[in-house]
Image 1: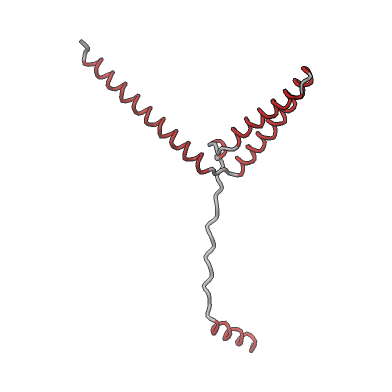
Image 2: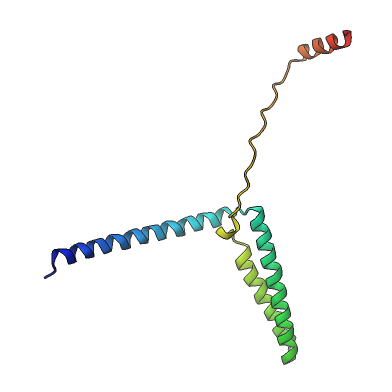
Length: 130
């Protein structure tokens, strides 16, 4: 038979596991929603561009060296293709690391009220008279 403390520990452990599971599911759901929206800030765009640029160049250089060593251009092509696909997988989705610096937009200026044509003509006439 289990003691009362063992039973309480087991119940507590199950509730902790459920809460961890629930928070993990919420985090995954939030990540999926963020990826669907596709928003990325300006710093994130710069980071994605740099990752893509250097990853494709690196794969091209490594592929060229390997292809030259084995005398097969096809391997060079495969390295560049693999680097491009990896860069697309990393840079195309809007991962949370690309959203760390959101833009703080200014509030819009209030629109001036439209004046009636008669009022404008009266003001213009008074200004010309002066």
